Length: 230
Length: 230
DNA sequence: ACCTGAACACCGTTCAAGT
DNA sequence: ACCTGAACACCGTTCAAGT
Image 1 (cartoon, chains in turn cyan, yellow, green, red):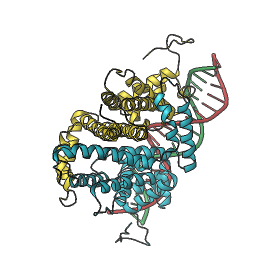
Image 2 (cartoon, chains in turn purple, orange, blue, cyan; image 1 turned 60 degrees about the vertical axis):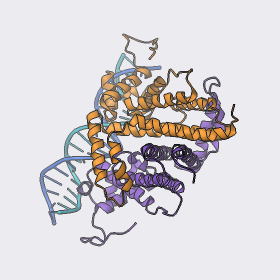
Image 3 (cartoon, helix red, strand yellow; image 1 turned 180 degrees about the horizontal axis):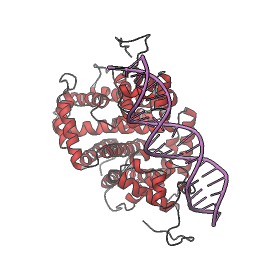
């Protein structure tokens, strides 16, 4: 977001790590994961492919940097006022939407639990759980369940989004799955056949949030017994 | 598991889709994801790389087939006797352990929600939720939350396992993260610093199960109100 | 019908050579 | 210190040619 002034900038086009990452994000967003090659990146930056290696260790380093840029941006403005459980939902949605808008993040977000992106999410969730009054012994489990769920589902959704870029394709795709489910062996797949209809018109985002609420309900169970009514 | 008799089999070495998939699994398990190339596979099967394409559409088809083989095997023997919530835990653990033992499954399991592997998991979980007495309106949400959590966490764990193949590396890795967490800015990362100690000696499998229990507790909340005490 | 293996069109990464 | 771009060691996939 913020433009850094570059001391050695010439005509505004010095090759910096920041500019490389930015160009990588643009390629990833507009043309997808496969389009990001060092050759394409070099062409866009009007330089040689080898020059990029002076600022970036390798492709995995490049993807990690691009991921952090997006996630840190998405979590930039947490609302400090809202109620803890609402704040948790807000963080979850921010991550979900960021991955939905930039599906290439998906695979990357797992790589290193110490990268800024993961840390921000962890800290945000953890603080709200404390504010919620979750007792010490249960805190680690509750925190880990929520963070795991948020990252896991968001990444799955990103994988789907990568497969089906357009909304119309998605609708047709879901309808296709629902149809195939309906035709399965009734004895072996009773349940799957039964929920096929729901699949057709469900919304991934709402589904994701319903899961968050379910976990929060479970957390409330773990919290209440140690709380006196006030 | 079951050996199919091949009509045109000569000396037990006819090139079949089943044999190709089996060889692919062996390479993936012993040498990792990057080691599975069509050249390596052809060498192991003592044939040309092009021959494989007669039985398999492309690499993604090959990986999907390998994934299904493992998952279907892992869920082969569900215990019909146990209590529903115990059965759900058993399914979750079976998936977790399968992905833990074959980390390369991770990325693949998302690809197609209509593949046998996903179907088995979905059906298994869904039936137990019905047996648990979850009312119709809540069923879809509960099912989706559980399946999403199971797949999401298992895949994350697989990604970590891929990074750190050996147990000793893992311990050192966790200790390293915990140390880094401890050194973070106390103002910005209060919570993360606080749980760093727990991270050091936590067990991924137990953590995973704790999350399942939390969701089950939430599901019980959604179930109880509509049930009369009996 | 099925197999062979050279050939094609790519990759990420390196590195001598330049400025 | 930083950039260039040819070269290297790979890939997945295709396809004419074989049996």
